[in-house]
Length: 169
Image (cartoon, rainbow, N blue to C red; front, top):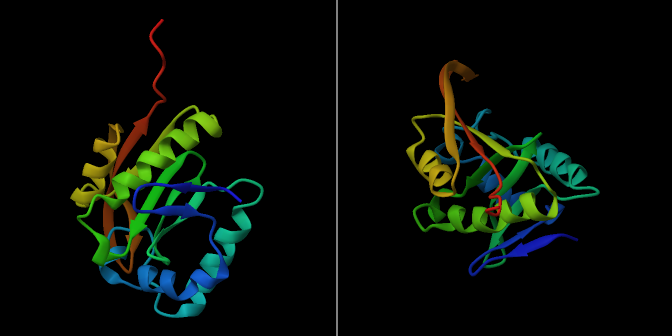
């Protein structure tokens, strides 16, 4: 089983025992404010999402559960093609945890899985996620209006790309 460790986090494959912890993440309107789906209003929706996450992690894990102190506090990784996505329980915000997680994930995707690039799509109003992507080395490549409609509210997208560092010739 693939897992990555950082100073404060364990990034690992999802398991059904994560259900309650992940429902606290996916059910939080603050966390889901800029996500492409509404908050999970029942645990059955989180269970379906978790089962898909578990099934998609075979044979290679690309989307990880973020564990801290024995609890799942979020998820991060590549979830579609080469697109990076992440979310973190709101009581763990502003602690540098997502930057720490990306610091382990980005080398894994480039060095172990040989991704030619990574992309991201963030609502430009989500200043924390945009700052996290830029701090990780992503470069803004474009933007678009009205790309997601969640519960009747349209949001925009800012697009980002990260290329692997190439050694100097």
